[in-house]
Length: 122
Image 1 (tube, helix red, strand yellow):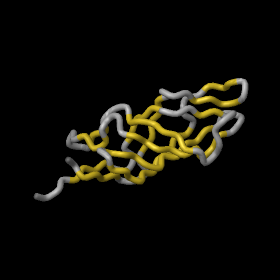
Image 2: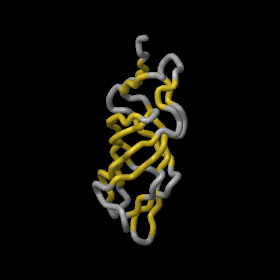
Image 3: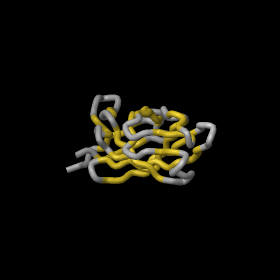
Image 4: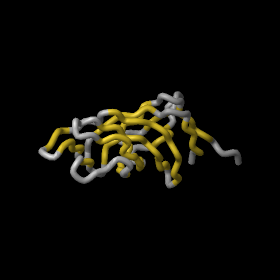
């Protein structure tokens, strides 16, 4: 039986929410943070390619005292398989605390896929 693949084009938007917190007081550039996809991402035919709840791994690319934050998406897990992905989040919603920038768990953000993304359908 031939396997079916599902694909998303580069530029497809993925909405996720942080599982971990980020703060200028305890987080560092290069640190890793986790998130989950908030809603299924579908291809042009309406098939779910990335299910809601899929884990996302990010790396802190910039975390500056003035509030500038950049996160790089590094991987996405779909149905138990980890895929290397590229995406970037500039300025996720945050607040300024007494010790600098703070991003709390549950914060939602959107990132575009920088490259086409393909998975084997089950």
